[in-house]
Image (cartoon, rainbow, N blue to C red; front, side, top):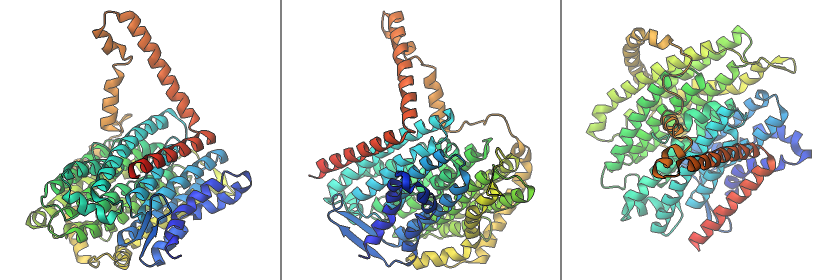
Length: 582
């Protein structure tokens, strides 16, 4: 019975989503939805360590509340709680709010379920539920920009699901089991282990923002409503990192090749995301690129965990600490943007900007913040002489890049003007949004002291808070950042009508090149003598395809289409997995 609480905690949002479709239950669902993650949070805080087998569910579902799962479950529940309460005051259109609530709950269920899943089938089922249920959140407002972002998200999401499913099928076939406990060793001994590792890295890397699979992030996050952006960036992209830590053969590989690839990718992601984010002209797009940059640290930690030197436990603990730090800070920043867009008074704006500044300084790793503590844990990983020699300068350089990006984000937030000032129940709307945002900022402020305690309580071995280490690292960061910011102040203050690097960078660049070939006949007609008829035929077909895509996107905002598509997706997945296993 105790083990059932893991499944119940994950399925409560799913049950609420289905119940909310009933006309008589809609009013009650409006009040219950913000509290849907509370059972999951209580499970993460007070439930004992659990390993549960449910042979009758799927193909033998396994659930495990271990140290890593407890941290991810607790963080996810906190962020979904904050985003859910923020949503209560964010939406004015009731129909729009109910549609958002339905897919919000579905996505929440998938996110919470995958954190405690202990076998490939259960994990992939919740992972797919989270991925595809988030698509309607991206295209929520129905504008052309959001639909474009939704198309980009869906393309890369499907690519990631294909790569991930292929890697999991190869791994489970090699292991003869779907349990996560059997997969890492089987992958390490597999003759095609490089293929399996590459598929898993890329499949999970789409969700984790691994460059060049990151292009959906700066498109989808700005298009989604602020509460959806908070959970997209705060917890959902961490599912890719959790997948790496669950499935990859940490410490079991004889070579450091894959570790080196992830280390190099992490450093490149950090600098690349900071550069692209620095030239953006809207705060949510800069924050999205900041997520790409910050995920570089988690990619780096996952790379260190792959080292064959027995440092996986320390790397996993550092990864968990950075996950909590970034999740809370980034979710608070996205919610802060949503609240600032409704702030109608100078005092509220000053409060929001002050809290956002603190969260930004935490991302940069300034003293007495969770960012400083998380980066200290990364630097302290005993991964050999090479890492010990290069850790401090590398983390200093990436922190300076983050500091520049934070300065740019704060400047954009200062210039952000309220787009709509609504009043409800006699209070300014911004005041109704402050409690959810303020709770995350308060957690961030208390984080340097609470985070080590929470990680040790979960079962992870981390060192205690050291003020001297924080102050020393922060002094070096301030020493290098201050003159560079002074030299680059003109660039920092620059705001153009269009960003120097468009959101989506690589994907946008490729798309612009492909648009020059529209209609396709301009390229294909070169190879046929019937150029004019062929060109006209292809143009008609292309226009018809575009109209069909537009009609499809309009249909996706309807309830009947969403329910049918969800049922078909789950039926197809069940048939395919049943065929593969039986």
